Image 1 (cartoon, rainbow, N blue to C red):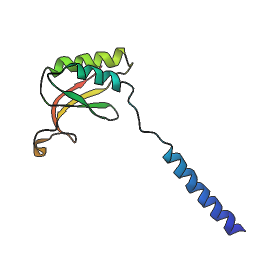
Image 2 (cartoon, rainbow, N blue to C red; image 1 turned 90 degrees about the horizontal axis):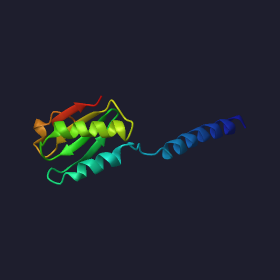
Image 3 (cartoon, rainbow, N blue to C red; image 1 turned 135 degrees about the vertical axis):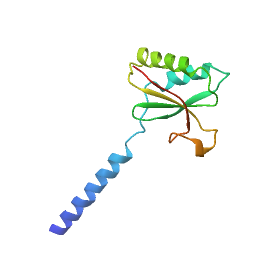
Length: 115
């Protein structure tokens, strides 16, 4: 009887772990739609959010065009609309040769720390 209870307890514990991890949802970044809307307005230089990490929004771009102005606007948007501050905006290019990438995501074009 003791072995049966021990086995049932072990199986119940592993079942609880399996259920808890299967119900975990992918993290959703609060400001994702606002950032996408802003980036998609510029049809001349296509860019889109690539990855959201802990404190960095990685944006993939195909041109180096006025990212100092665009990232400033994105920081304002994140602060005003989304109430998010302190994020970094990393603009990368993945179309270049992987041997010249200087970040894990691609070649860095621009980096801004939002206030």
